[in-house]
Image (cartoon, rainbow, N blue to C red):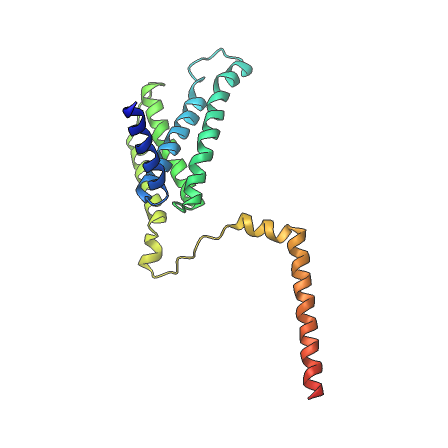
Length: 189
């Protein structure tokens, strides 16, 4: 019983610490991202060795992996977005890098294909691009302003919301009336 209480205390402390600890947030984000992409890449390549599969058989083999990827990746992206760990562009860079690594592993282990030096050079180029983006190296080197990330989805939703548009119209009308009132007050003086 003490073990259960001790485990519960560790778990609750970890959850409470999760909101304050960037390292725990990054670790959780990366673990979920890697697990999700692992399922995705296995699902994409699982049917390749079987040459006589029908389309339906191949789909039934691959689709569960895609569902698992979608489910786990939703949480990974949510953590990255909620705690502002990475930008959407960096999500895509990380996705490409992880998929590249997993393709090399699957080619070597599962499909028994060779990995060439050009594959390694391409991987290094991808890593360099990711680190330039993540640490804003180019912007810092040339003293460019690093703009804050704006949530374009929320801005577009707000502008399309009829309630917000009506409120804006009412605010504009009120401003016009206030301006007219001010002009009339100025004329009286």
